[in-house]
Length: 328
Image (cartoon, rainbow, N blue to C red; front, side):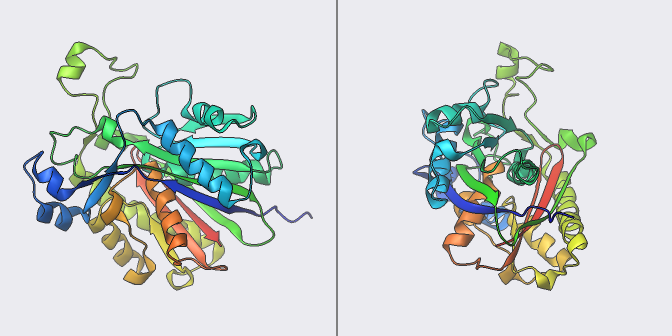
């Protein structure tokens, strides 16, 4: 019997816009305070893209850095996946725009829309394509310009979101790599987090614009309850086939949604705080980009060493969720 091909990450890169929007800045925009935001979310600041800086621009910069880290050229890539809920436009796919900006070959390029779970879904898809032998090198990007769909007059949501992009190059590896993947969704709870208008259900009109239906709408309290249980359960499901316990995981990188959610997930999993990676204070919630950027930062900061087992765990609109165990 042939041994299953191992697939791992051989290059990482991230891009964050220059503009920093602090909680103090938000105090001047809506009725809120730095203390209120910090206590309830753990966020101190977030990055905001320039008006002429689109999701594909940020995705391309992150991709270039990941390719450089992998010692590859854009023409080496066989597959491009962009996870985003803020595409440049409905079509063509943002991945196709990234392909053109990179001057990559005419390889398969497509977007996936699973919100905050997007980067993990992208890794899972690329993993299968490479394991099957269809492709050798895959570029997976999580990129968002959430500032473009944020209602800056809604203090319950505008304090949460930021812009950015992270990218990973996947390829066959000799040892380690992706060990286990667990994905899930529950469409019956889709109304908890959505952007109501702009699609075929509610096409754009002057009324939808006046009613501010082209911005994120969220039921925060209900989402909190679902997120804690689902992320903890996903971590158990993805580690169970490997026979791993909490103490066997060197670092957990959860989706950077809300500090209270992340702390509650850690307690539910029985994890010590030093095993949970956080950068939410610097960037806020970047949806599909959050897990990717957090992984890049954790590696840069020396939190991940060769041979470590890391767990990425995310939850987002859909509802969707995903977890993945990688041996570095």
